[in-house]
Length: 399
Image 1 (cartoon, rainbow, N blue to C red):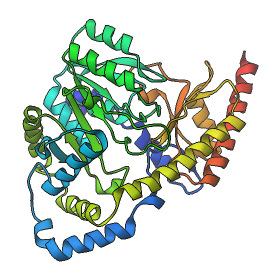
Image 2: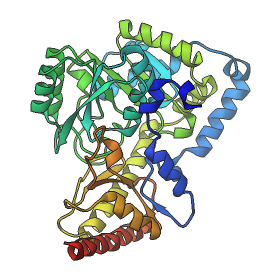
Image 3: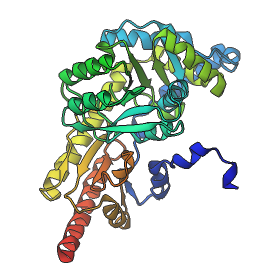
Image 4: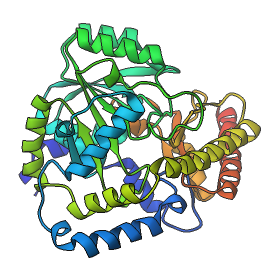
């Protein structure tokens, strides 16, 4: 039976996170595993009102087929927001509405990647991008992240050693690390990519979720050779499955063809509901509510880790987004920690799936703070600390 499947399926692994989430469905599990927004912050009543209004006023149109590009007023909103937030002059025709950022990655892979083409990716990198691009059988080259973003010396050297089609990055509150590129690092990255004629795929899914520090320009502000990805999942609700690609018109022409072949157009009813919601509500006020809630949760998680984790354990202190990245001492496996933790009804994502090279990241892990309440964060971190002490003790006994 396996001989009938395409070769590409042999090299594309299941989403490790999706498999873990099956384990964490039990109500007694405290889960720091999923990259989930907090459902208590979803604007349920406002979305219900917007849905009712769309169906009452424009139901026959909203339930019909639509254009591949997406609902023009929604694309105009995105373009206007780029101008307001980033100072970018974007034509609405340079925006394509997609079924979340994940479809954006799939379409980019279809348009650009042949088997064996080189893709530069951060190390650690976003698992969803690794999985999406893997279907097209590229060659991944990994460039490590420093505290202020990508290691630009290694990026330049890697590109000097051979050509690449794409560089994929999450420069603001990176998934999984929570790291944010500094202002200078964004400028330097753009200059290096331009000098090597490499397209930057800038995924900005978390950019609106800053609860500390200052807003920074996008890489697109420094290089037109950049494809921007955005999402309504983190600022409204992920179940609506709405994202977008912002790209130059010559790239957009190819993306439209790939999109037509994939699904004709994204869910038109969801597009209309989102647009109606944006018309009737103050999205900045709603985002501020999210940022305040996530900032409090991050502070609590980091404070609890400082109080209860052994001193030799490192962790990031993100200024926004949804994740903390933890580095364990050498010789302590995050998979072993996961096995202990799940017995204590705590879940997280071990770090190795965020690397495309085997044997790397075995002592790292990702914690999500956005989808837990304060009591769960306190109790979950305490339980993890006990598991860490148990593992460290076992290591000492073994040695």
